[in-house]
Image (cartoon, rainbow over all chains, first blue to last red; front, side, top):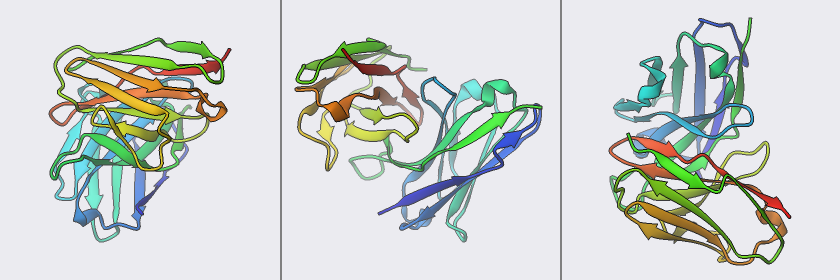
Length: 123
Length: 107
């Protein structure tokens, strides 16, 4: 059973870059899946941030205006998110998740999730 | 980009009620729609994928239907554990979009 655990700084200053890592256990990142990041501002809905394959192929949400950088480290079995030029609007719980699908080679939904980590942007 | 319209935003219901939540996509998405349940302070839980495929361990009172642009999540007989917020999510060409959410409250 795949398990995911997010880690990060908790508090970031405006205009800085926040770096989050998702450590995967029970499954090798190199074996498949896309790996995704989703966030949820306090009291609001879910927003997809980006997804990455073990090969390094990435997709991110255009609404984040190229502030997103995704990476994967198969040797450490983890993947990471860097979000630059943060503002208060980036305050949210950040989740990592597996992206999978019913048919081989499809990646349509998020089936295993981490518990989430709160990132607060404040001076 | 595909826009998702989920309704209602809030739903008040009683234990035993039949509950229906709808998601409409701004363009055709085949059946690549999933439904999630989220409780306060917890990560979302996948209930249904591919519009109507119930995930393992999810009670059979949950069902999903629809294709194309209109999709429905139905809870046939609401139970106390079902009071939560529900989200739909669509996939299209390596872009994943969530609906705004529906909070199911106790009437």
